[in-house]
Amino acid sequence: MSRAPGHPALAPFGTTIFSEMSALAREHGAINLGQGFPDTDGPQEILDAARQAIADGRNQYPPFPGDPALLEAIAAHQARFYGLGIDPRDQILVTVGATEAIAVAMLAMVQPGDEVVTFEPYYDSYAATIALAGGVRRTSALRFPDFALDGESLRAAFSERTRLVLLNTPHNPTGKVFTLEELTLICDLAKEFDAWVVTDEVYEHLVFDGREHIPVASLPGMAERTLTISSAGKTFSTTGWKVGWVSGPAEAISALRAVKQFVSFSASGPFQPAVAVGLGLGDEVYASLASGLESKRDLLVEGLRSAGLRVAVPAGTYFVVADASPLGGADGLAFARSLPARAGVACVPVSVFCDDVDSARSLVRFAFCKEDDVLREGVARLSALAGA
Ligand code: PMP
Ligand code: GLN
Image (cartoon, rainbow, N blue to C red; front, side, top):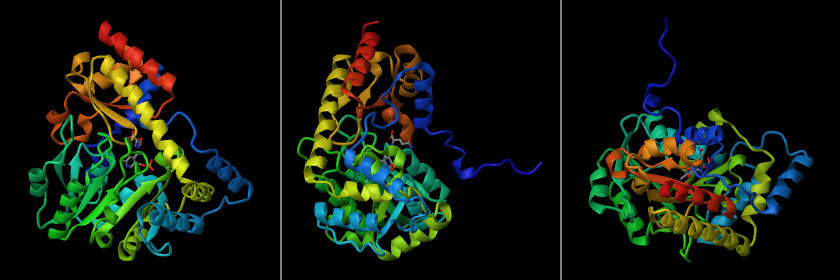
């Protein structure tokens, strides 16, 4: 018998928690506050633009680095919001969601034995794609409830083998927005160890309470060593379109293009010009996307508190992390697996995103990118569980 199929580096990973929890939600007809996707559509203009693109026959392969209109729109977006100058011809690559951008960045930048510094809890594809590239993950922990950066453990994660830092701000699953001081420390270490920074900023427009998103590439001396990833999925509530992108120095983008051309070549043909329309929408559209989500955050945070849970109030993203202990969730993974059947609600355990599982044992993540009535019903079900 020949060797069993399967990449050995992926052996520890199994099925992603998002698929597992969404499948349980479907099986039990539960309210799905697990996997992060909105239950309403984004701006009408981009939905119309996608329909129009199909009607106009934009249904064949776009150029693999990206539809020229989208490349221009991404460059214009980075200039408009952050004052960054990016050449659409050789400093951007459009990808199949941010997920592909992360994967091609790891495959292009990381060689076997290279170390990648990241923060835990980490987005699950980080660990898997670092492993696929043969890299070694080194983490610094963000701990509940404030998830502040721990400078000592961060410095300890760096070594002469550090190839890059894989950062995520605003941060999934914690909802943390890294402060300027924290980002400056990370950037100083990256420079000291001559490391790249790959920064996943998919929630760049979903920040609350008047905060400003700080792109790593905008910090002094960082544009030349930073790859910035984003996606239309979160900003425009179009997670199924899978349009993402990565921008940065031309030599690095060229290395990523070399990988991507053999992974997917191109995708999402008619959605690319539609996302270009979205990126050009007025400031008021962006502001209302964030403020709408902010009030949903408040609704869910208050609801979880009234159900007896201690929560970390998120500064951005779709997510809020809570300590499930008062609802019998000392083991958050077991709690999340049982919740759809017990209470008709799905969430995601945080410990699966951690190497130090004990640091997040009782934590679970709830998504608030849902209609208000859905959130209220979810909270009512959790409160009933608390009273049972
Ligand atoms: N990075 C983070 C931090 C995410 O939360 C997600 C999920 N949206 C992704 C990347 C993947 O984005 P996409 O759906 O565009 O592939
Ligand atoms: N980013 C989404 C989340 O954190 C999930 C995306 C996925 O299912 N791969 O919930």
